[in-house]
Image (cartoon, rainbow, N blue to C red; front, side, top):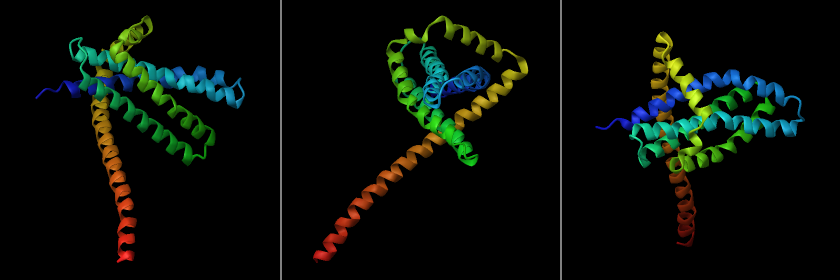
Amino acid sequence: MNWDWFYALYSIATVVTIISFLWRFAIIPFVILSQIFNPFFQKIVMFFVFLIPQYFIASYTVLIGLLVSDGERSIPIFILGGLFILTNEVILVGKMKSNAQWNLDYNTLDLLDLRMWGLPLTIGYFIYSCFKPHLAFNDITYWIAKVITWIQDIPVVSWIIAIIAFLYTLYVIGVFILMVIQLLGSIVSKKRNEVSPQKEEWIVKE
């Protein structure tokens, strides 16, 4: 059996794990800077700030897809990568929304709703880069790739990241399967609701 698909997802999960950790610190200056704007412009600024890690995750997903398939475009790998990006964002936003609702943080809830509008842009960029990967190749992504490699080379840290990435890969796969099951369930339920009134109407006529 060819396990390239799982290796690709595991590699993407590794990148997501490291970028998410680094972004916790990198976002602090942006949050402080956004305070000088009024609430409307603050949301606009944070909207574009939220796109930064998504750009890198999408870029490295494209690069990983090319590396796993020996430089060739593998549509199945790219599809899996895109679904991973989508599911990962749904998971992150879902967790942050849950925390914001628990703390009654309505400002964060508004920002998270705005963040979801950036998801189509991320997916659109990812699809474009699958066929035109030049946007994913630049000095910044190359430098961050070296940082990621350097972090992975740290003895103890590399094992911790490997375990987290492996478990997160399984977690994302599980969440995606549940999302598909829920979607199919809602479709079936909707069709049943459409059929039920027709049956009732037929019974009344009889």
